[in-house]
Amino acid sequence: MRGGHAETHKSGRSGWLRAAVLGANDGIVSTASLIVGVAASAAGHNDVLLAGTAALVAGALSMGAGEYVSVSSQADAEKADLAIERRALDEHPERELDELTAIYIGRGLDPALARQVAEQLTAHDDLAAHARDDIGITPQLVARPLQAAAASALAFSVGALVPLLTFLLLPAHAVVAGVMAASLVCLGVLGALAARAGGARALRGAVRVLLWSSLAMTATALIGHAFGRVFN
Image (cartoon, rainbow, N blue to C red; front, side, top):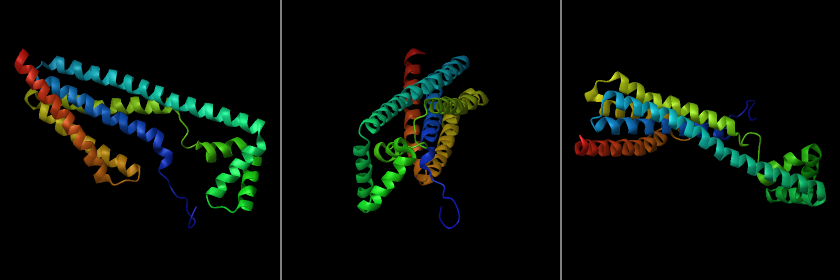
């Protein structure tokens, strides 16, 4: 706290924010690309709708499962590290105290103060002190598989609804251009908001999302058009 007010930091949001942004971005891009590609092949309305709906359901489940497995692996590694640290504290408490003291000396404290800090933090909660300062595990950044999976799957579903609903509202001749335009607008806003939430420049976040997303949708539109000319 400085100047009588609490500071708001961004890093505590990293877990759910990363999963949500990735999910929403992928939901828009993959579903829009699929709809645009199938529509460009001159497929029927029902075929495009089926493809978009399948993309939403399969993508949400895939994103949620993938995020859960990935973050669970991180959580398993954190638990293993904490178990190792707990065993070391039980078997060699003085050595671990020396290790913590050396960490604080390395951060700029003089040896006497570093020892005092290490002793006080060890007396308060030795495992928490080593988890934070030796391993780098904090309550704010600890892996949460279910939270990450839910955020990713929900965000993907919401993102996928953008191109799907746009398709349903447009006449057949405007589907390709309309879905691309609506999706890119939403992606630009999403990129800007995600960048701001993470403390970066909004324009930078929007541009990097729009660049790769437009390439993905253009590529699938061209492929769909080419296949449509060959097989129709």
